[in-house]
Every structure is written in structure tokens, then in C-alpha cells.
Amino acid sequence: MTKKITLFNHKGGVSKTTTTFNLGWKLAELGHKVLLVDADPQCNLTGLILGYSGDEDFEQFYLENPDRNIKAALKPAYESLPRLIEPVEPIQVTNRPNLSLVPGHINLSEYEITLGIAQELSSSIQALKNVPGAFSYFIDKEIEEYEFDFVLIDMNPSLGALNQNILMTSDFFLVPTSPDYFSKMAIDSLTAVFPRWVNWSNRAQGMDELENAAYPFPKGHPKFLGTVIQKYRPRKGVASEGFQAWIDRINKGVKETLTPKLNEIEMMLSTEKYNQIEADFNETFCLVQIPDFNTLIATSQEHKIPVFALEDEMFGHVGAVLEQDRAKKAEFNEIFNELANRVIELTNE
Image (cartoon, rainbow, N blue to C red; front, top):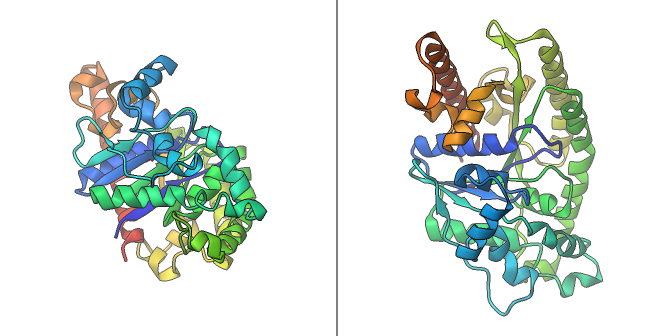
């Protein structure tokens, strides 16, 4: 069964896009067929994979491939066209078999208002009943057509209707964070946000109009896989003292505030499932910690591949500096191997 996983945090700057790309690449490297979906109107994932750096690049891509993006795929539902949503041909990621992309669209945000009205579940629902289930229907069509094992969805940093819809119609979600005050506050605020979203989803799932729509609203709730903490400065192999203090606060917030609330609203896996990772995993729910790799991230983006896939000649260094680069590459590879394998284990039936 295909696993649909969203990467979500309404705080920006926590490397959601980089994590989506690197995790997808590693899952594909491990033999799984993976689809990346860019659901962020900023299109950072699309730009990273296709090597685009400005609006002109995207405009040219849309002109040459008018139907190969997320906005075009959803158009029949959002613009009430007399045809059903169909799968789009994804973009094959260069140098990584089994990894594909549904590109984003910089005007996807135009659909936010329509979706927000539809998700009020009021008298407007009859006219807009096909909208709430449209994204889920599209993803299912992609899975049916191309037989993906995993779908990873990159989302924008907001609490808008689009993110609410995408997350609540997925199977699983993980929360990328960085060790700072704002990530700690984001974790705390999700404790209040997710119950409201579940309440909305429960109402939507109970409505005959949505159940019998052309794009039925799916049943169930997504399950929390854990957090990823990244972009901290290491010292002697571990986070420096200041960063470690924020890592501890984030882990404490997840353990004591967020996961108890998620458990109440049926957004958690079983304790036994989490314990399959390691005995004390459910003390932090942190899947991996990823230090700041500084210039290597820029180098990987230049070549449109993860750090762990860089070749020696791509580093641009020799001697001792090259050896340092190799060591960081090996560390990055080990971290994402661990993340991918933990995701696989947690999402197995």
C-alpha cells in the first residue's frame, strides 16, 4: 500500500524542502518508487530539482509543459470544468531512478480562497462539494497510474486551508524543526491547531455531500511519524551547548504537550510501533538530528543532488579539505539512511 507523507511546519526556514528531496532520494536509492509533490506556491522543491532560479525559468516551463504541474492537475475541480481530474506525467529526477516530481505552480495560492470557502462546510458546500476531496483524489490517481510506493508532499509554512486539506487527507506526517525559539513556539501552537483540524475533518467525513462527490473526501486521520531537528552547529560530534538547549526544549514540548494531544485525537501510531525504532524513541519522537553542513548544502543544490550523492570532483577541493568533505558526506549519508529506514519501519503495515 502506498504511503502518503506530508512534511509540515508552519514555521519557515526549517529545511522542509531539503528534507523532502533528500528523504525521497534515499527512499528511491533503497529501491522504492517515490513521488515528490511540490504543494508550496513558492516552488522551492521544483526549483531545486529542475535548477530554476527565477520567474522566467518557471514561466518557460509552464509554457512548454502546461499540464505538468499541481495547479493544472487540480483545475477541473477548482474551476468546475466538465471533466474529471486525471494524473499528470511527473518529471523524472535527473540521476536518480525511481524518483519523480509533480512540479509546483507559483499561482497555486489562487485556489486557497476557493478551498477555504468549501471547507467552511456551510451552505456553499453543494456548489463546492468536489473541492475538499480533489487533492487526495489527484494523488490517488498518480499512485494508480504510476504505482508509487511513497508520496512525499512539500508544503508551505502556513496554517491556511490548503495545508489543512493536504495534511488531513494524508496517511502520515513528520515535522521538520530547527533548534530555536520559533520552532519551540510552533510545536506548542500545533497542540491547539491539530484538534481544530481534526474536528473539521470529522465533520467533512460525516457529510453525505462530500462522501458522494465526484472527488469523495477520504476517511481517517494522518499519523505522526516524528520530528526532524536540523541546522544546528556541532561541536565535537554533538550539538553545541546553546543549540542543545533548544533541542531539549523542542523534544520536551513534543513529548509532554504535542503527542498527548495527538493521542487524544487519534493522530498517533501505537506505542508498540514507535518502540520498534528503539526503546526510548517515544521519549523524544525525534527521528534524526541533522547538523548544519554549511557550504556543502549549496554545493549539492548546484548539482541538484543530495550531499550524500556528491562525487569528489563536485566538491572543488583537494587534500585535507576534500577528506573533510568526504567525512561530512558519509555522515550525511548515515543520517538519511537512518531517517529513511525509520520512516519505512513506522509506515509498514
